[in-house]
Length: 129
Image 1 (cartoon, rainbow, N blue to C red):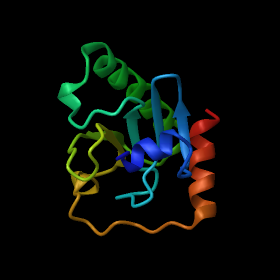
Image 2 (cartoon, one colour; image 1 turned 45 degrees about the vertical axis):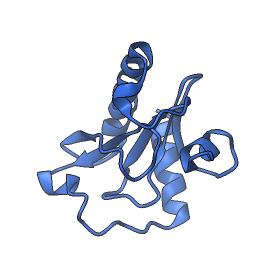
Image 3 (cartoon, rainbow, N blue to C red; image 1 turned 120 degrees about the vertical axis):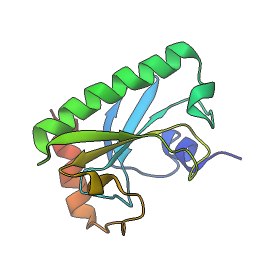
């Protein structure tokens, strides 16, 4: 059965896209820790990030770097934090999180609920840079 991320890749489920190429997709997390929290995924289905082919893994990291640089231009933060957990969805992914303190990366924090218009505005800021 396809994961929710594969359904997003296939266009079966909408997302707030911030970047895409032939191999990778980046979109806003709909349950973000902070405004601008982005998920970056390979378009191939692989559960565990370290089971990815070396070329795909290095490409995912480089693509994430490009997205993080765009995020940093448009989001009020000191840095873009990076996390790989991999338990919530069985599809390798990287969390890019705008941070001003270490607490911004605490996955135990209550998730935000943002208005769809705010999500569109955030995704457009990052996508257009």
